[in-house]
Image 1 (spheres, rainbow, N blue to C red):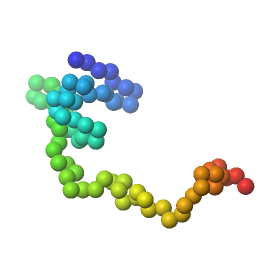
Image 2 (tube, one colour):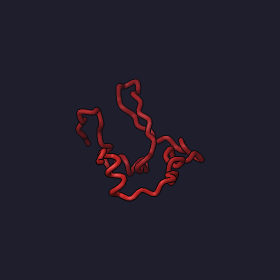
Image 3 (cartoon, helix red, strand yellow):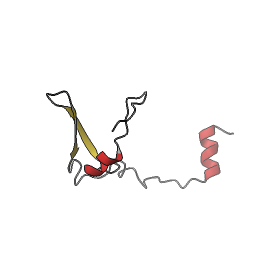
Length: 79
C-alpha cells in the first residue's frame, strides 16, 4: 500500500492502517524508524486524557454581540 508525499511533507495514512490502529481525527500518533530501517507508527493512548481541548478556554468568550455587517465593516476598514 502506498501514498504520495505532498509538497508540505504530509501523507495520508491509508484507511486500512487507520482502521487497524483505531485512529480517528485528532488521534496522536508516534513515528519511529526501527533497526531494519522500517517506519513504525504507534497510536499514543490517552495523551490528552483529562485535558480540555486547547480551544475550549476561548469558546464562547466574546462579550460583544456583533452583527455580520458591522463586523465586516470593521474588518474591511469601511467608513
